[in-house]
Length: 394
Image (tube, rainbow, N blue to C red; front, side):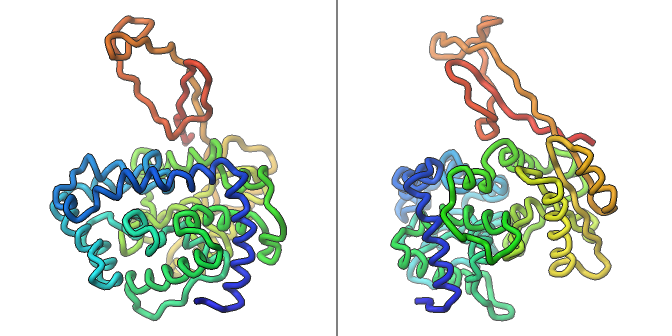
């Protein structure tokens, strides 16, 4: 059991966040969905079924609307399911408890393209919920924000690092008397609260209000835009020149890239020429000065920690609107650009049920409606329907 002063302080801070489990519907929904998710997906990973696992059974797990817990896992799905016989073989090896987790973890991330740490540990959590916690950018950012990120040996494998991370997660789970699934639901709150406060010493200095919680959690239109951009990166203008930064496991670690107690970058990208870096930040409920300062802080961190001396680091702020304060601030920083986005909102005539199909009420023809449920900006009662379309102005 970890008995360091840093761990004790982290426990104290997490107790405050844990209190939200009984009051905040969003967190309660995540926690309460555990049974449903395990009942649906545990059976497909059982040994007597695994060798017959189909693409149709596996793919839904990687979507938030089905796992109710992790977003963005589906981005590598085309690569992962491209070779189903290989995927079945690797999953069988990953879930073979007679072998060391270091060996199994390394084999999985090194063998299947796109099968990074976030997906591997999500599967382990579902199949062995008492034994394995989740390692992704959010949990990593939370552990770093609490100053309990493990120390790794030089050249240590990803599997070896996961053992140390998982030990820390299990210790925290036992002390807080919550399961690993519930603990994993708290990391976003920890990570984003720490980066919303200028002084690390002021973090977690009191109870978190519901209003403040949802403000720093980023739920709302900007959060949906963030997911839209990362899910459709290759289709938007930024994807023509930049690629989301990825690590040796193939994970898009550039999404909400953790920078320790400095915070987390919304999107960290590299130019296709392999030289330059791009820090992308969405302007949420911050002042203009906070937004510019945050981007410059992240750019400074990337220059110090990631970039080579001959590599440039640029910044990009994406906002709904720009006032004079923001424009004047950016006028003094040549390496930070600004792009605006627009949201289009439409109401459609309600579909009419006809013979088991959907009939367009205006034309009378059977129609299959295209929807993007993750990108709704609000839910209208009755028959109202809306969807979000992110448009970046050039």
